[in-house]
Length: 290
Image (cartoon, rainbow, N blue to C red; front, side):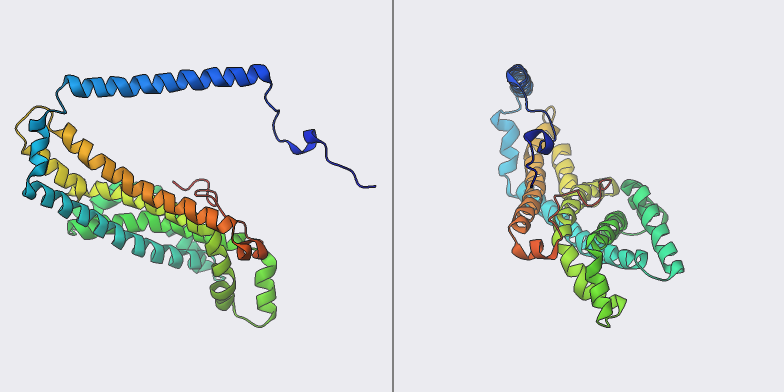
C-alpha cells in the first residue's frame, strides 16, 4: 500500500496562523512607514540645502561637462570589458589547474586562488600601480582580474564537480581523455548552471572599477570629482552624485537582471533538466563568493 504524504511531512515550516499573519502585517506596515519617513527626510534635507535650484543643475547642460562624463563612462566600461574577459580566462586556467591530476599543478593553482581571493582588491591595485609602476588602466584591470579570476576559478571548479559523476565516467569509458571529458562533456553542462553566478560576479567587477578613481584613472567617478571640484557653489558633490549614482546603479541592475533572466530561462530549459544539472541562482554555487 502506498503511503500518502501528510502536509506536515512536506512543509518545511509551520504555516502562519491568524495572529502571526497580523503581526507580520504590522511589521510590514511599520517598516514601510519608516522607509518612507527616511526617504522623506533625505528629500527634505536636499530641498533645505537648495540642491534642486537651477544654478546647481545648469552646469550639466554644458557640452564640456557632458563630454567629460561620457568619456569617464566609456573608460569605466573599457576597464570592465578588459577585466571581465581576462577574469574569465584566468578563472578557467586556474580551475583547470585545481582539477589537474598532477599534484604540483593542483598545489600551485590552489595557492594562487586562495592568495588572490584573500587579498583585498584595493591593496592589489595600489601595489601594482605604486610598487610595479604600472599605468592606471593596466593596474586597475590587473587587480580586478587577479581577484575576480580567482573567485571565478572556484565557481568553475565547483560547477564542474557538481555535474553527475556518471557523466564523466561514461565519457571516459568511451575512450575520451580527461581533457576531452572536461571540455566536451562536463564544462557545457556545468556552464548552464554556472552562468547566473558568473554574471553576478561580473557585477562585482563592474562596481569595483570605481576603485580606479584612487589611482587617478579617469573613469566615471574620477570625472565626477573633476566636475565637482570646479563648481563654485556649496556642497557641489551632491548634484554630481545624484547624476552618477543612478547610472552606476542602472548598469549593475542591468547585469543583475540579465543573471535573473538566465536563471529563469534555465529553469524552463528541458535540456538542463535532462542532464540532471539544476539551474543555479546567483551565488548558490559558491556560498562564500562575494
